Image (cartoon, rainbow, N blue to C red; front, side, top):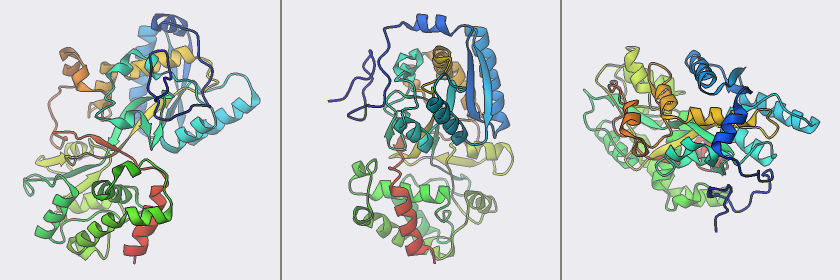
Length: 397
């Protein structure tokens, strides 16, 4: 039976939560907002993009005007920096220097495992009710690790394919349809060689579409079990590779190389982990205005990035208010705007009012995904080294 993690009954994905801090007394959202006023939130976030930095600066202005909160962007080159700092500060005792961290994947797993996170708090956020948990299950599962209310979803990344619609009017909507296209257009399809991230993701997608029991993917796996479970995957790749660019005997080294080959008309199909990249490539004139983008009808591999509150944060109430603002339709729509950031929303359009949906209803840019598909969560981390090692042993030569 699922564990109820908060007073409102957030359903736990795991059976036990020994790392959680003791439950807090009942407190209304109005009381949390009142406590937050006048607090300063030190938001530790990657700062490698001018667009992201400008967006956080806008958010800082908004939460100051609306809630009297000062939001300071602590600019990181690697989120692991913040994780190490929180760990050291917790060991030393007392309050910490980070109030909110932009996080996902291994960094979240480490902080959860080491009991460095405050919460659960996400179901206290009024705007969490707008999150698309069903269509985007990675909003509550972070690289096969249940978030359990310890981090609030912020944005989505998802495997997306793209092509020139003037040359490919009917895109392949599954890996089997991609195989059919490769047979019809030999030498015009390829993908980056693992362990390139995009290449590994392509193979993960093929695994998700061919494995007999997809319920295995969130679970830890050893080499023997992987070898058996991955048989359909490698049977599929064995069929596909002879029809690829250079007959599958050589592969591009990066996603950027695949994109350039597409732009040069050497390939028919490109791939990306940012659903808005094709539209951005059109806007920069790298690709033609006839570019189309799609996600396989059964869903594609994806993940969510989040914000989390350290267990020793000084301004927990204000951090919750900031996290709630980042989930607001206004903030999510601005973040999704290609001209601002282009980071896809975590919200469910069906849960929004017409006026809120209207915030997202800007003219569709050429190269945009017309019908976003559901997100297939990342397999458990134990699958990745096994996938890459098996691929390299079989095809690397």
